[in-house]
Image: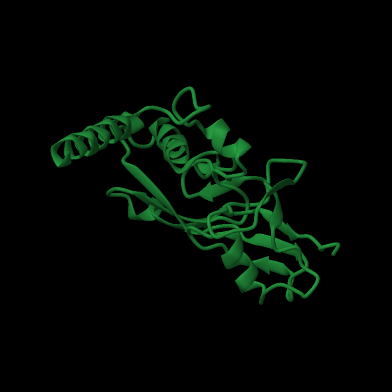
Length: 199
């Protein structure tokens, strides 16, 4: 009798183990890999590769050319005024694209094979409005989240809706709602609005 019970118990354990091994496939209702669109649908904000804009402070280095190396500000027109080559478009470009713009300008009769590097020293500020204690303009820091931004503005008011946040990108005419949590990211130039709760 004990032998029969032991065999029944071992058989049940084996069946459970085989069922557990099938957990490598997609979860019920999931038909493929998770995409950026899925994340956006789930309310997760993905910040794209950074593009330069007015008020960004940059350091440009042209190897072997000290006169062309220095710190520069992206002006209101979206351009940077550089020695020798004049104004170069920066707004709307990634750092890699901006480096190539400078290199192309230098190849026009100045330097045959210029080696250019650039980095952002200070990003343009972000703005926070609504139900925070000190709304206004603040310096952007790397990996900024909405909770960090609220802390910078000295916290929520007692009327604040602490469940969602509204963010408007610099290149967008409309704001979009996101969960107000520790993973929702802020990009340079964003306008953040903390709404008012109604209960």
